[in-house]
Image (cartoon, rainbow, N blue to C red; front, side, top):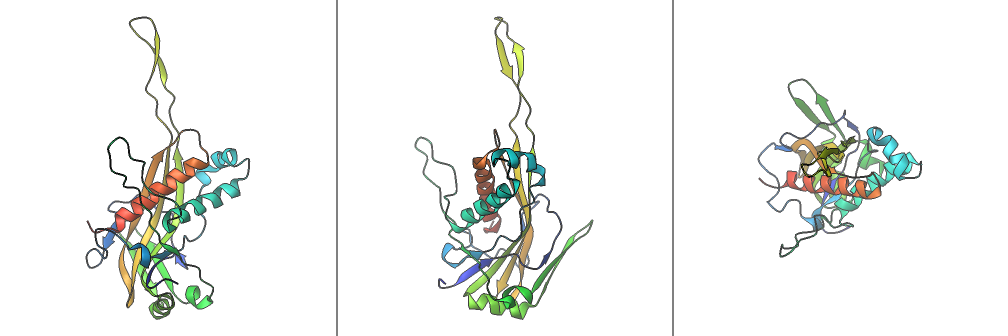
Length: 243
């Protein structure tokens, strides 16, 4: 394991469906990270549970040759690769624009010891007015993080992917007599989740919130999943930065 790590994990969570971020992260004692966000060499993560893709079920069946389960797994893999640095984040530069693409480079949190996942719990309770969080088993969590040299734990859970259908363009007769297509919009894919930031020394809640990101897409395919996952990873990174 590298030096010191921040662990991005979501284990033993009691969470419901996420909603769009309002502000993305609310810090307990001010922003935890600098403007550069969580440092790559000190970050590790685990994407917990399946991504809820029920809203895209038909699209996944089409894009993955009838195998909806493979599509769901691909979504989780794409997000994991974005967070780990296996994929470059950001758009390609155009013209004289500077290339600002980058890699997060966070390390996956792979737990083999039951004590790492079975003796600490994060509970998230929703209400009409506010959300409340509780961390149980802080000592065992701190020990699990210490075994990995971790300073922070960022929890992601309840990932939900949705797709807003597009609208076709409509033909319009121009003054010269030719037909021109106007209006219409592309489908919009959205990925949303709850996020909790925990400190490891001692283990305590440092911040929490809801992060969501969207991307327009044409015909739904594997590259659509890549684009949506990349947008979420970038938005998560922004949410964790000092503002």
